[in-house]
Image (cartoon, rainbow over all chains, first blue to last red; front, side):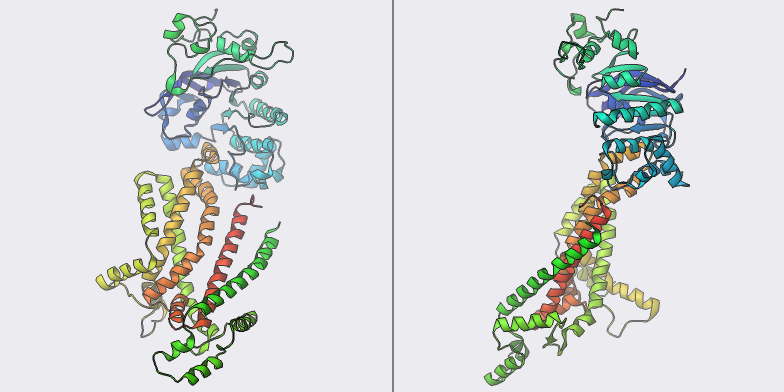
Length: 309
Length: 320
């Protein structure tokens, strides 16, 4: 199947400063959910913003590579053409639904905004209601202000607005991280259902391997701006090959296991002080001389000198 | 709590506040040297018995508490007293001047609000040199007192260039009828309204800019852009709306600034309004007129603050 979203050797950097995303490649096909996993600061969200063509700070920009949406390279498009793709072809759901909803606008106005942004102004109440129904919210939610909704309901409103125009791709950036555990499952269920019903390609960004296990067919593991391992989900969980992936999986709390979860030493290096060679080498238990000097290429879904084939 | 009961409660709170203002004003003016009788007589060598008779006629020989009591009693029946200097009831005097002041302050407020918000949004949106220019201009303007700016405007546009009249609200021979009269009125209004509006405009531009910069960085603006909203829609639907409560608060809470400025502006431009009347009544030791105007100004500020809070609540439902 051809990729609906094809990210090819994408580079993102701060102008005159450090590189945040260093040549990552990902493919999302229609109806498929690809998980993108990594610690905070690994460049996951920057990848998402690059696809949207929006960065939270004006100094951050794409410095290389291509982002193709159904074959068209987005990076070559003029600003207004990219704006018209946002919401219409690419939907985005954010981490914290309370700060990503305008506190002075009702839920319905947020959804209506998506339609209006693309020139659709007729039958607004019924459009808004239909969008709310898809995320299992009653029609009465349209008149509610964000502070009158629960965290889970707010996230449903954001999802409804993101899916209002039936985009081809949905980027979900940590959609359940800010929510109570009890409502996470409901939100993920909505995303799963809508993805399969509409043949939506989903890029699910998360640091939660449990979320990946339940929602994704494939997963890419990101570390310090690069993809270190990419595989089918079951394979990755059964036999992780990159030492970072192994560490991530070992750090998950598993009640069935006697040993306490493994706490990986150290942290993601800051973007302005990236180590040479493999960026994971200062934290890697398997490190050898070669790792310190030369970055390992991606081979058979893993970028590691020590990984067995 | 509903907005209506909130408003009623605030109105009830305003009554003791205004009463305190009335008492304080009365005592302060009583403590000031001079009284209407000395002002009326001037330097004329009047016999002591005549002066004493005048004081008795006007009730000025009574002790302070008695005079205060009588003043409050009259106030309670909405009687603002009698102007010695103008020989007519204060209410008649004030009513005749109110229109001119409302015209001047209303115009200044409208100009300051519209231009201030527009400049603030522009500065926040464009950044760079536009932003720096607006901020510099606003600081400079805010530092300029109205009476000084007013005199500069007169020097430049009335005396120097001769484009606009410098005194009054209409020509002495009387205003023209219809459209011509309206345009003529605007020519008289332009300089005093500009002088009065500028500091207020600077204040509004600054707060609008500061709030707009904040909102433009908010997550919900990023989310709106992610839905495909254009920059114009972002500015109108999110930035303006979220900046509005702060802007309205600054406009409302500084209504006193506008009224104080109006007294100075009216004096400089010979504008026949309340402010000019206050200035004249101080010069004439016309206590009842002074008291009435001071109380009206206080009441206006209280009402402006109340309106501000009610509007704030209407715009932002989270405010309890």
